[in-house]
Amino acid sequence: MTTSRPRWERLWTAARLATMVEGGAAYGAIEDGALAVANGRIAWLGPRAELPGAPQDLARRVIDGGGRWITPALIDCHTHIVHAGNRAGEFEQRLEGASYAEIARSGGGILSTVRATRAASEDALVALARPRVAALLAEGVTAIEIKSGYGLDRETELRMLRAARRIGELLPVTVRATFLGAHALPPEYAGRRGDYIDFIRREVLPAVAAEGLADAVDAFCETIGFTPEETERVFAAARALGLPVKLHAEQLSDQGGAALAARFGALSADHLEYLSAEGAAAMAAAGTVAVLLPGAFYFLRETRVPPVDLLRRAGAPIAIATDSNPGSSPAGSLLLMLNMAATLFRLTPEEALAGATRNAARALGLASERGTLEVGKAADFILWDIETPAELAYRIGGNPAAAVIRAGETVAGGI
Image (cartoon, rainbow, N blue to C red; front, top):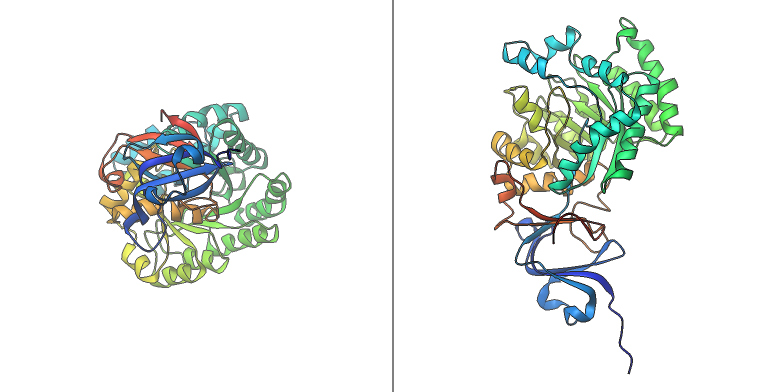
């Protein structure tokens, strides 16, 4: 008599699954579920009663979920987490009445961080970013976007992107790196905006692409950033190099950036407080994700709320991210952003969670791999000590993650 070997490496049972698959039950919920992992991927999931045999015969290790909820791992799809310096002094200035735009025009803002980042080595940038990413990992973030944009010269932009790649090697997180050379006009190009755009297109972008340092290209299309025409030139160069695009759009004014992004098939358009109906419709038609950033809205004390109802009616997917950066959103918690998205923007808790899982994956071009609990996808998920998934958006502070799983292995927590 021969005994068949278990087909799975691990099997979680007695858990409630929030698959976050669209349609059907709220949160895609499966009560009293089970989830199996093989070769770092989800091999089976469904009601425990439908397991094709006794758990101990199916997996090398069986883990009792204890009635906890399992959701897909969280994805932070918009960060500037690699940088040097901080801007606490500007925080004080804003509290005294100065606006974000006024600080930027006086030489502060992004350019303040540029000076600090240009002076930092690659090792220093990695050392500074590592604990910031580790804090996100501890609450269930296993995929993260990291932008450049605080160098605004060739060498520092490349250094930032190399640092981002190293973060993905040093920590159990998937890193998507984004080149954001068109973030601000550096002082050495004052009065020569066209020359700087040419510099990005002809010298920096090709170097980024040749070294394989970026997964996408971004720009800041705004009155204190770059015009739609300048942005379009950057996008055309990116697409010629085979790189997808995304855009900081409609944060402080309506520049038509969302429609421009959609025309280039952008992965996402982000911020969007001043989004128009035309922009929302264009995004929906192109499948461009609307990434909302409640941390920046809160920190800058903005009053213009992104048009969430407009996005819903248009059918544009909505994602949520920290926008972790030193100037406008020094945020270290994606869970807190879920609460802010619900409280400040009136997203439902389910929409907020979808925004940090399913739709965040789409915003990074990772929808086929992550964002939902489905057979064949990466086994990245979280066991939560909660009674309902709504608690993830309900609570302010705290971290109910009992275990964070990446590729089937526990990388944080103790289960």
